[in-house]
Image 1 (cartoon, rainbow, N blue to C red):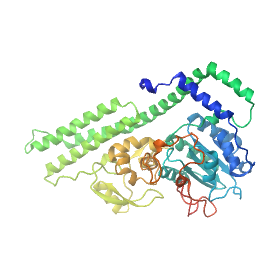
Image 2: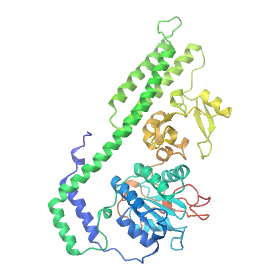
Image 3: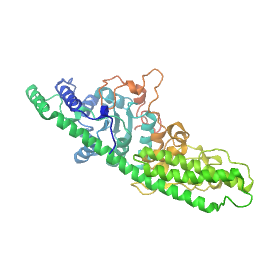
Length: 454
């Protein structure tokens, strides 16, 4: 169990205050809107994370919509989903931005308009690049039916989105009497502290369970990397006392041995997914020591200090950049080992590092953000080269997205309302810009809806 500092522990006062604020929101009158168009959608999303227009129920049935809403509520994230028909009430150029503005809550908003689908988010909830990468990946990997597409989007969005569910989802609205509300106040005063603490405990327990599952998956992959490293040491067949061995060779070998022991100790000490990143940093350093030792033994030029082979870090340090494109993605230069450079130049596929996922083995760049700590140790994470290499992939949607960089003319995310908090219509319009061009949402980018066709 992770230890929390005293100031971070849930308090009865904090829990009670949160429940009272939710009740105050329930007592606040909600402006009346006409029962049509984006105003209706926004009013519904204040009460539940999923809204299906009656004319679009053939796309997502009521039981499926309820199951999707429950999934979002259980995760406690500010993710809003609307399924709408193509209609003059929902202008393709502005519907997403209008729904966000009228709902007035910071979050990640996704709309299926007819057969089209796109999303936008306040940048303190998910960066624009991350939204675009996620939308593109879901569209390329999911069937066209609404149920599969929306569940695929929500499953990944709940892993990445920051913030909490809005308090209005737990009840309240523009109905109900003041008497009932004040009776609720009495109930809150009696049991509010305990109920609030129970909610906090459940939320923390879910987060810890998710982190444990992710860590165990990462342990398996990193343990394979450590085993592969040990096999390289064995194949080296190096004896420090053999004829011709220099002090530099002995130092390289000792360093390689030390990093093997260090990596095992770091993995054994890992308690959360992010603890895996130092382990792969250590393995990358050890493989460079092995490459340097091999060059000294052959009398060859010493290798340049480069990042590992992009396709599989177990191949050792890269030797050159080679042009490569992920499935349905744009070409870009990536660092590769000599063997993979030769394969690609010969028109063959590189030997990709496969990792386990719920959909079966996948190249690590298609395995989602759970593998970000593993890849970040090899390639430097958000501050290294990996973000640019993985643009347009599931893993890149997390690593490449700036999460705390203020845009010119706007305050940084730390000074803005958090995910699930009220901001009214005060939000960054560039996160929700664009339109549904070409008879559907255009392009793959969330937030940028112009051009192309879905």
